[in-house]
Amino acid sequence: TQLLEQSPQFLSIQEGENLTVYCNSSSVFSSLQWYRQEPGEGPVLLVTVVTGGEVKKLKRLTFQFGDARKDSSLHITAAQTGDTGLYLCAGEGSGNTPLVFGKGTRLSVIA
Amino acid sequence: KAGVTQTPRYLIKTRGQQVTLSCSPISGHRSVSWYQQTPGQGLQFLFEYFSETQRNKGNFPGRFSGRQFSNSRSEMNVSTLELGDSALYLCASSSTGPETQYFGPGTRLLVL
Image (cartoon, rainbow over all chains, first blue to last red; front, side):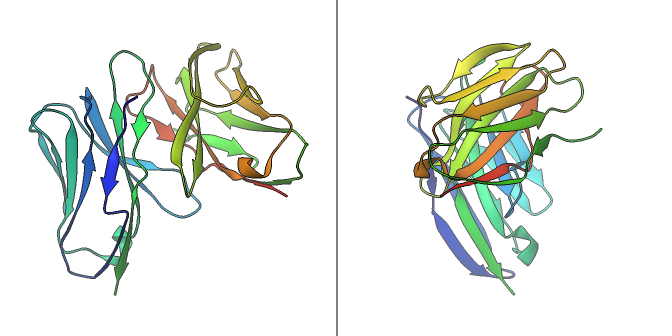
């Protein structure tokens, strides 16, 4: 069974600080997706990384896929209160197998 | 393009009852997946339907079932509800498979 471990589970920081959240597995994934979920809503896709070593930037968010395609990280620069939410990573296996989700990192950015 | 819609948004049921949740995918999407989300277990995959056929199934008891209609709309049913079934039930659609899934807002089910 493929598993994704996310760390930290909870993170509370001041506005303007930087942070990194991690998504690790012993399994290889064909792609890794990152979602953000706000209270009362469904997850919203932020990015998909496909190639080992790939780095993608989305404004203040930087996503990296590990060389071996087993892990990923999300780095947020100068966090804002609007970044508050639950960040989920999801791995795609081979074929049409379902996405495997991590349990998420709950981020709280305080003004 | 309209997003994924789920109805109802909130539901309160008592133990032993059954419930049916509905999901309308994005127009043109043929794959619909269902997930259960709880604080302790996170997002857990229930099943996926593609062109009216169940293509994948998660590790949930037979009380959980689903179906997909010819217009790609999907329903899931939970029979003989248990307290532990209280959760946010999310539906996601995509063109063909697990790539780039778009989630609906979910149905929050409370079982008393």
